[in-house]
Length: 238
Image (tube, rainbow, N blue to C red; front, side, top):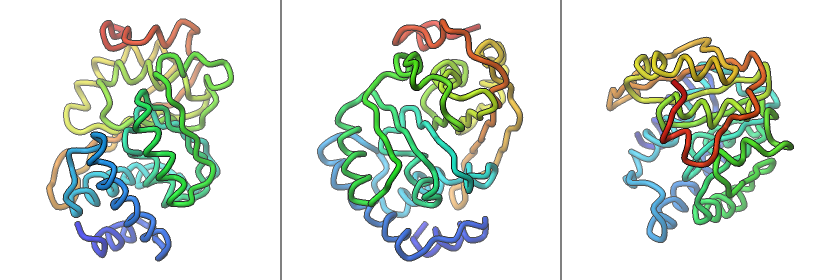
């Protein structure tokens, strides 16, 4: 996917990028490649692939959810900033928080936000398990997002405690989403969530499976969740 295709395919979905926004994506790509030589940010470095598999893929949730309002978003385990930074470029109104356990990635993201002149973006060096227990953070976000970080039963424990009641947890998955939802039903319910929609589509050009799972936060998460770091992954709620 070249930059012209990127722009036109987003326009087909109702997202129009200005020249300055396209410049932000171009600079994002340059910094990603530059920093990838110092720290491991991505295995995908070919420019058309970055535009398709990172930038475009990150924005696909906006085809199914309205990000045009003034919303607060927490991106859990964003790595090199996906999906929240591409969404922030498209929708400057968003207030974005990113939590990541690796300081080197936080350093990259901080520089990236400065270079792209992004405002209302905050980075936290923390584990999602301890971040979700912070009283000033817990149940404070309109949207919590994660992109293929872990299985849904585990992701739900990391993400749902951060979403406010009436907020939404958006899980971006590749294939096998139906199995993960079935496996994670109990965890989602215990944590205060309810699956509202599952959007399945194929990523353009390469035709690979994608699923966007929208989970409404309908009640408060019990205080014991998330459990101590590593516990959700070792012992998922069943």
